[in-house]
Length: 113
Image 1 (cartoon, rainbow, N blue to C red):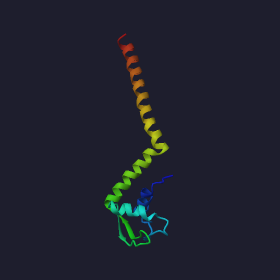
Image 2: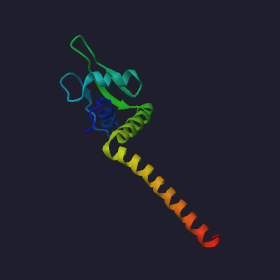
Image 3: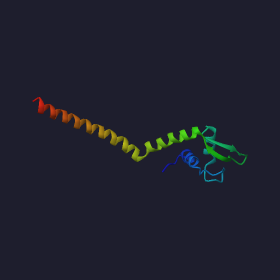
């Protein structure tokens, strides 16, 4: 399961399911929203006060959608299937190389020797 709050927030924002008000009482971590707003990945009205961070109407930006793609790719690469896919691809290249070498050796023996 993904534990990066930035990834989860950007996914919600892209899907349009991010709450309209984010503060200490919302299920979305307000400090992570602050990070994304400050980095330009989200736009929101800052309604913070002495009691803590709060944001109204957070929306994903174009830069946020691009960053979401980067985070999604990192999550895929870090997953078990992503790691296995990388190794399976290398293994297949190795096997096809050996098969090609054996085929060349066989054909050379048939036609030359």
